[in-house]
Amino acid sequence: MSEQIVKRVVIAGGGTAGWVAAAALVKQLGPMLDITLVESDEIGTVGVGESTIPTSRRFHQLLTIDEAIFMRETQASFKLGISFENWSGEGSHYFHSFGQIGRPSTWMADFHHFWLEARDKGFGGELGDYCLELKAAAAGRFATGPDATVQHAYHLDATLYARFLRRLSEAAGVRRVEGKIAQVEQDPESGFLTALVLESGTRIEGDLFLDCTGFRALLIEQALGAGFDDWTHWISTDSAFAVQTRATEPAVPYTRAIAHQAGWRWKIPLQHRVGNGIVFCSDFLSPDEARQQLLDAVEGEVLTEPRLIRYKTGQRRKVWDKNCIALGLSSGFIEPLESTSIHLIQVAVAKLIQSFPFSGVGAAQAERFNAQARHEMERIRDFIILHYHLNSRDEPFWQRCRDMTIPDTLAERLALFGEAAHAYQAADDLFRVDSWVQVLLGQGLTPRGYHQLARMMPQDELRQALAGVRDNVAAAVQTMPRHADFLQSYCPAGEA
Image (cartoon, one colour):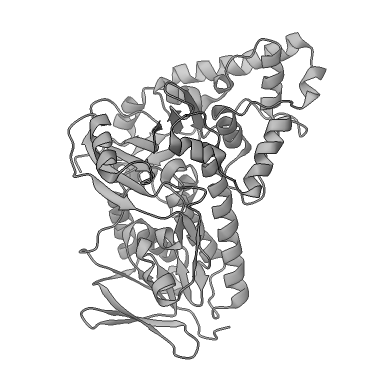
C-alpha cells in the first residue's frame, strides 16, 4: 500500500470521460481534493456517444443538474428505448424499452409468465401492449414531471455535453491545463505514476491519476502495461463511421438500430440534427463500402465528413493499476449497440467516490474496484452478444455470429429462458428482467415452458386483468403530447 495521502487528482484527457469525472469529483469531494484536468484542443475525441440509458438521470441528480438546462445546452431529446430493425431478417422489428412490462406480479413469477399463459390460450396481444414507455415511443409521445413516471434517457451531443460539464467543473474549482502529454513519469521503485510532462515542459504532479485518453490508454497501458482481454471472438465488429445530418422530421423519442449484412447502423435524433453511424465487421465489409452504404441510407443534408473509428472489443485486465484508474475507452470497449459507454464512465466514477483512497492507494481497494468493473462489463458484454448470436439472417457475418461459441454465463441465461422463460437480474447487473425478456423474445427465442402460476387464475379473470393493464397504458399514452411539442415547451435548444 502507498502511504502517500491522496489529495492531488490529475485527469489525463477531456472529452466525456474526463469531464464527467471532473464534474462528479469536484461536486462530491471538492473541498478535499485538488483536481487538474489536462487536455489538448489539438487532439480530437471520439465524441460519438450520443445515446444514453436511464442511469444518466440518477447520475445527474447526484450532480444536482437541472434537466431542462442540460437538455437545452446539449441539443438533447428524450429516449424511451431502442427500435431494433431487421435483426431477424429484412422487415423484422422489435423494441427494447426502458419501461416495466405489465404490473408487478407475485414473488413467484414475473408478468411475462402470465402473458405467455394468455398467449397460449389465444388472447393477450403483443407483450409491448403492456409497457407505457414502448407504446409512447411507438406513438412519438412523451411527458415528464411530477405526475409522469416514464423511465427515460437522452439523445445528446457528446461534444456539447463535455463542454457543459467543463463549465460546471471549472466554476467549482477544477483547473484545466491545455497541452499534449509528452511523458509519463513513474517512481523507479514502486512504479506509481508521479507526474505528467507536457510538450511545453510543464510538469503536472499528482497522487492519483485518471486515464481518460481514449483508445490510446496512454497511462494505464502505455505506461503501466495493465493488459487487455480481447473479446473480438465474441463481438467481431471492429469499425464504425459516424456522420451528422440535418433533421428532416421531428425527433422521435427512441434510437433506431438497423441491421445490415455485416453489422448495424444507428439513427439518433437530437433537437436540430441527427446522429448517424454504421457499425461493421471489416472481414465482411470494406470501409469504402460501409461509408457509401451509410451515405446512401441517411436522410437530410450531410453536415460533417463521415469519420472512421476503428476499435477492438475487450476490457483492460486492470482498470485500477497502482495509482492510475482508467475511465471510458481507455478501460475497454464493448460496442455502442445498447448505449452503455457513458453509463460505464458514470458508474466507475461513482464507485471511485465511494471508495476514494484518501489515506493512500491500497491493493484491496484496487482489487475490489477491478472485480466490480470486470463483472459489470462481462454482463453487458453478454447482453450485447445476445443480439448477435440469436439471429436468423443468412449473410456470412450473421451465420458466424449464430454459430460461434458464447460465454458460459450467457449460455446459462439462454438455457434458462428457453426451458422455462426464466430471466433474472443478479446483484450489480445493469439490465433488468424486462430488458432481457424483450430482447430474448425479440431475437426469436420462444420458451418451451413457463411458470404455471397463471393457470391458477380463472381464464376470464386473467383476460380481464390483462385488458385492464393494456387499456391503462393506451389511455396514458393518449394524454401525452407529441415528443417534439414537449421538447419545444420544456427545453427548446437554440442553434448549436
